[in-house]
Amino acid sequence: HLKVFSNLDATARLAVCFASLVRPSRRAGLFAVHKDSNKDRMVMDGRPPNFFEESLNYWTKLMAMIHVITFFVLEPMCVLALYADDLIDYYYQFKVSKARAQRNAFCGDFSYADFRDLRCCGKEFAGDEPLLPCLATMAMGDHIAVEFGQQAHLSLAARSGSIRDGELLSLNSQVPRGPYLAGIIQDDHGALEVERALEVGSDGYPNPQPDVPDDAIAPGRFAAMGDAYAHHHLAAHPDKRVRRAFSGTLWGGS
Image 1 (spheres, rainbow, N blue to C red):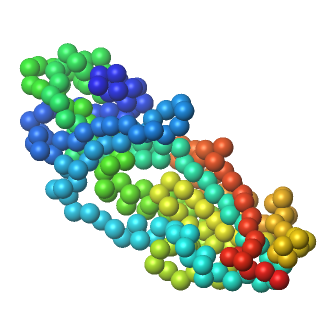
Image 2 (tube, one colour):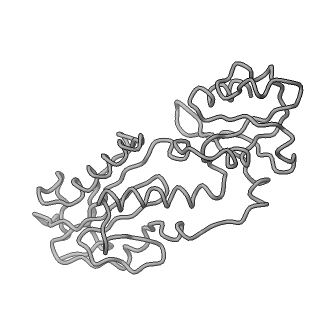
Image 3 (cartoon, one colour):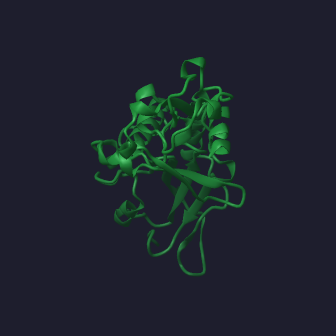
């Protein structure tokens, strides 16, 4: 446990509070799930604090859903291109208030001696009173994190001009008419763009262009979003930035 807390403290993601400030029934657990061959994903078992807090679901209703393309009709000799970005460790880039950090306090009483070498543990915590480690950022497992995460990412998209009026794909809205549609799902930014095909394949359906067309809208929009990410010290996975184009019975035909 202390090694985990030391790693969190080194990246300014840990806080400390007196154990008397957080009831034992509201303290969270911590576990890991597989992410890739290099690292695991840290998840907070937020069920205890979540139980006592009202859930919010306004901004999460604006999450993009891929099923909306079932209502999408392509003209002859057109294909649909998918563009996508995925932010790195999105929730753990947030700064939260002292109250929010204490709300996400972890189980287990610790002493000042356990935490004295951590940057987040000042002299004011010296003494015999037990201490609790707290997550000083948003957490996977905090049920409000999805609401804040969705709102923040949508705000970046709107302010940067990456997604404009009449283009937003969301769960409860009608499908925009295109040719460019985009949406946000927590840490993911995705877009659909209608592109003109240059040839027809042997199956009778248009062949997607292997390269991005010169008149494509998506590259400029994703560049604007990339600038917004950089300004706010966020980064997208370079190996998860994709462009794929589709054709076939689902997407329309000649």
